Image 1: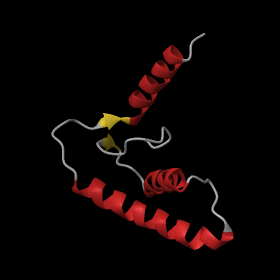
Image 2: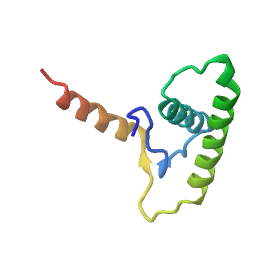
Image 3: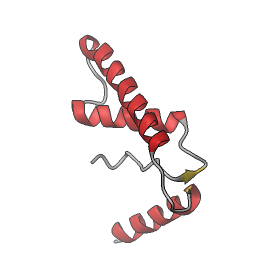
Image 4: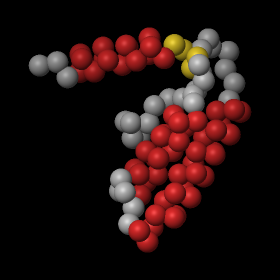
Length: 89
């Protein structure tokens, strides 16, 4: 899985449209194996990003959980701490 794609479910506040679009773009880039498609493939690339974003929004709206929502700042701090420990020299 692409490390740049972050979990979007069960956060307060909920994932924004921009976050969903960014995750979709990263997914399509990973699957396509390119960060920028050729002019011949640009339309297919854009359509794929839109389709993945729509599927992601549908999924996020359909999921339910009994766990309390996570705080974005606290989760980001935990991730920074893990990275600092992992990459410490």
